[in-house]
Amino acid sequence: MPVVVGVIALVCVLVLCLAGGAAGYYFLYRDGSDPSPTPSPLAAAASPQPSAPAPAPTKAPQDCLIGDWLETSYTSNTEFSTGTVQLTGKGTRFSYGADGVLRMVYNTTRTGSLDGDKYQVIHKGNVTMNYVADEKTINYSSPKTTGTTTLKINGSTNNSRKLTMSVDPDSYSCKGDDLRLFGENYAMEAKRVRPPGQGV
Image 1: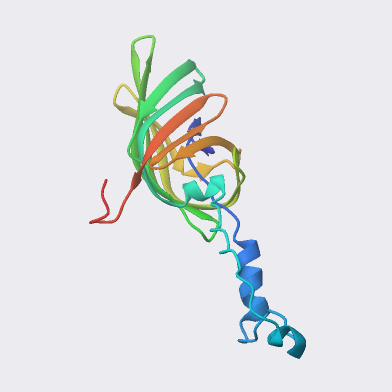
Image 2: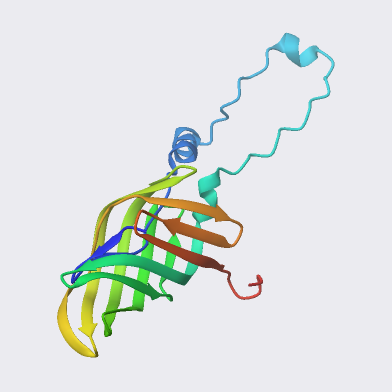
């Protein structure tokens, strides 16, 4: 996921995909006209020929992203003035919409330690971003955020500021109900959240 930027250069998740081709077709023919050509009288008189059924449309790899997700693990190597801290955590809720918008809800604490000191990075707030994905990469743009990022060291607040996000791209792999986002210094895994009555 893109980096959460605030008290530290921290890494988080964001993403979405395009809905161009189908939307273009809809607006082109929404007046109710039939886009297929009218057969000529000669063609209409000919005996009907059996036609093969149209193949079912195949889903693009990035279609797997669309839906609601819950972060189950997160690890990043984050630079502080005191050195590099490996932060871990889980719990961020996010969704990739078919409208090309990533929506995230943070009520998440990342924890780590360095030289005996305990670090906590606390994100609280909401994020929306535009996304475009191919089969391997998610690119982001136009982040909008509310909320704060707070750094605590050994339980004492060291710094707090507005939650902000980078637009660095994510690499990803998605299969069924499992999603992995990763970059040079971070990786996260998530499980798909299904509506009630549709399984886990």
